[in-house]
Length: 233
Image (tube, rainbow, N blue to C red; front, side):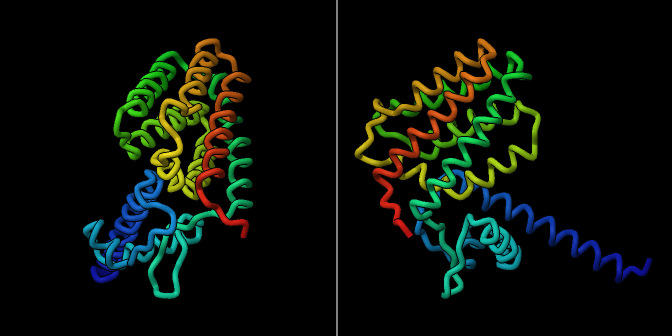
């Protein structure tokens, strides 16, 4: 093979690899809830934050725009969208179906070691949630680890990808709900739902695990509806 052709292929592969890495890092940033809804960012600013050139950032952003995780602005910048109330309610219904099903399937094959991992994440969430000054990002991370450890236990990677994609569209709202002054951590329903989930996992109660996950999603969604100022259009 001609050296120039080989060099071209290697350069293309390297560019694709960098773009994928930037995509994954940007995706993780959005999933963490670190960027609030409505926050505007420029490609140049995002490239600087990720210590890379604008080209792979542009490719990553275009992919995230197509997935609904970001929206393009006329000024060539992008922002994290805030879903309308009807869209949010649709997402919640889809989450209940997908995540409830994942929990139900996971219980059928889950092992004791995975249940122990989930329990540790629940304890971490509980500890973080009861601190005087809540670190929203760490708390969100513990909650996400709990949920996705459960979902991944089902052994259905396509289902997990679907759940990740739907989380990507509303993850920024999680930090708003946790930092709201209207919601004291002592009243978070998630503590009880996580406890009910763990009880169901220990009993290998598939229906109980599904119900706990659905209740967790539903109660959190109800609070976001109350405080998130979501528009009707």
